[in-house]
Each structure stands twice: as structure tokens, then as C-alpha cells.
Image (cartoon, rainbow, N blue to C red; front, side, top):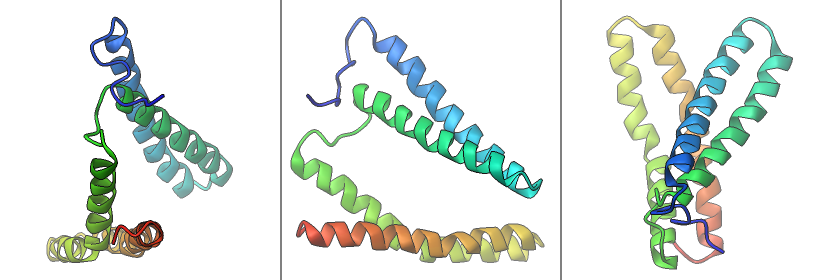
Length: 139
């Protein structure tokens, strides 16, 4: 059974939509609280909330699939979406470095540093996807 469009057009579509929004918003707020907990020295709380955020994000994705939020309705469309994510991750450095420079130029050094700090993680995201795409002969 595929989750794609499972709730679309059903009597429970509104319920699934409400759950989708709640989980996505909850995951985002958890991620915000993770950052705040870390800076306050509550590493154990940050770790617990990080796990909750990841699970809530996954729940949101599940409900999103049920609502047809993806156009991956065929094998080719699925891989094209994965490839587009790979390309975005692989190009993140070119996108983020100028944004960090703009933040520096505006005198926001901490923000510039935080933007720049995310670049290695974005590159790691691309490497992970690239390895899988190569494994399945998609690139």
C-alpha cells in the first residue's frame, strides 16, 4: 500500500491535513527549542527534543504523503525529486556563501558565521544522497 494520496478526497482529508500542519509546526518549534536549550546548557533536554522533532517531522511527512504533497507518483518522478534534492544540497555552498557575505556586510557577524557553519552539513547531505544515487545508477 502506498501512502501517496491515501487521504486525498476522503472523509478524513481535513483531519489528516490538520495533523500534517500540527506535526510540521511542532517539529519546527522543537528544532527552535533545541537551539535554545543548547545555548542554555540543557544538553539532555536538547537531545530529547531533537529526537521528538525528528519523529514529528517524519509524522508530518507521512500525513503529507497521504495528502499527495509529493509529485512522486511514479518511479521516475520519485527519483527525479531525489535528484533535485541532491542538486540543491550540492549547490548549497554557492547559495549560502553570498548570503553569509551579505550578513557580514550588514554587520551581523554571528548570523554570517551561523550561515557559513551550515555549509559543511549541506555538503554532507549531498554526499549521502550522491552515494545512494550512484548505488542505484541514477547519476
